[in-house]
Image (cartoon, rainbow, N blue to C red; front, side, top):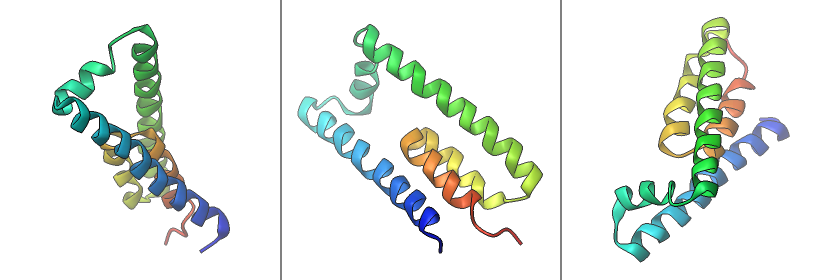
Length: 105
């Protein structure tokens, strides 16, 4: 495995673990669960803007993944879509780049 692929994989793991730590910490602290976390995303203009920024980036990434998957026939790369929407762009993008740079047979 190339150094670049290892960097992508490490970023995907970091992008899955680090944000999730903060999400779980917030939910434990407030006791509100997932609905309270989602409500917090829209608590003010700053968080709402960031939420929309990440949502638009996730949609753009999804379109790119779909377009390239059809062209390259790299079907495994489709797992980056649920990773993007269930975990976040910080996991989905480097995961897709990791999967995209593997040799396709």
